[in-house]
Image (cartoon, rainbow, N blue to C red; front, side, top):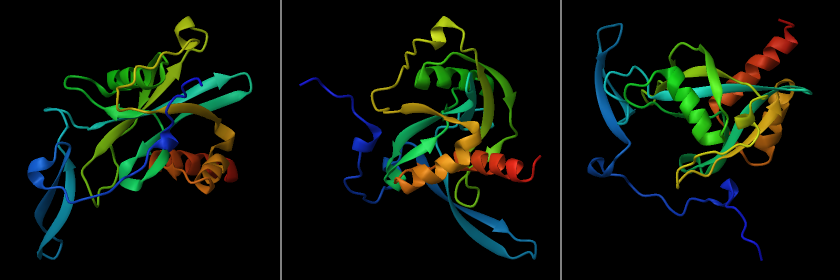
Length: 209
């Protein structure tokens, strides 16, 4: 029988266990002592990434890629298994920034590595904090355009690392909110960036903005 390619849905969590600080490569827990508006000293427990390059204001980028097709614009999305939630999560392409890299350069590089598409960065968002009550992780959302007429965007060749199992697909922009609900009902997790995009588009439609 022919070999089948591994799928994101084939992954699963086997077990969890405590992680001691000396073993941690990617994150660390910190205790912050701060003063509230009334002058009371308080503590806050949070997590930090250990991968932010020296001199960089951000950890990475999220990439908004709209593919203009004959049937209308479609958003490029991905399926990727995320062990912390034990689910395959629906995400936009994203990645960590390298030392000396701009957010725009990071976005173009990550898009090509993860999906094979060759794009051009057009717009960059303010710095966004993913979950500021829990961690300091942040990013820029970068809007990347893809010229579908280019030969390199016809025969896609992603350059995934050996531990990356990413499945790319597209969804019509007009259907994004409905598709998020459908995917959740099928057991997928919805990344907050995708959900926020969907909410914004749906609100704009309902308010006729």
